[in-house]
Length: 118
Image (cartoon, rainbow, N blue to C red; front, side, top):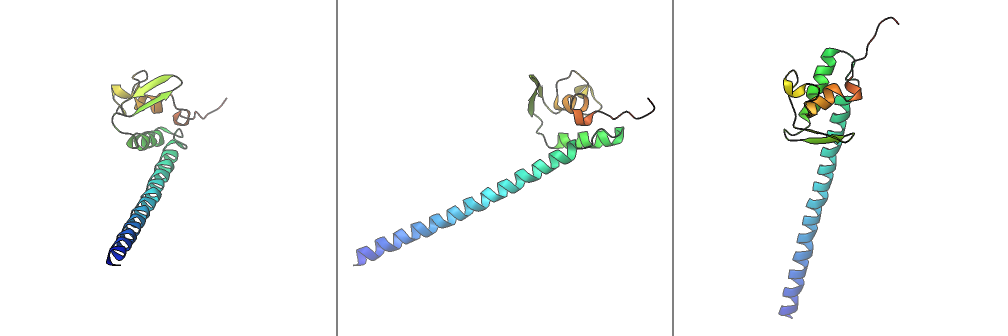
């Protein structure tokens, strides 16, 4: 009888313990989803209406680059852009193939809107 109770208690402890682990995994899953959603929101905020004027473009360019790691890589249209680059420096110039080059010079939402008479 003592042997059976010990096994039963051990089994209950392992089930209850694994329940706590599952709860932790469940919480971590939702935390990861929340963080991914925040990244998604920040990305769309940075690329939306970025080409309204030069100051807005500069702010949105800084915002989008802040989302990337220094060694980030993006392949668009078969062209690989790697590394962040720095706005206003040669690493952001057209043809430098950095993320800064892509967003500043090629990404459609960052193209400045030209207004005036036709």
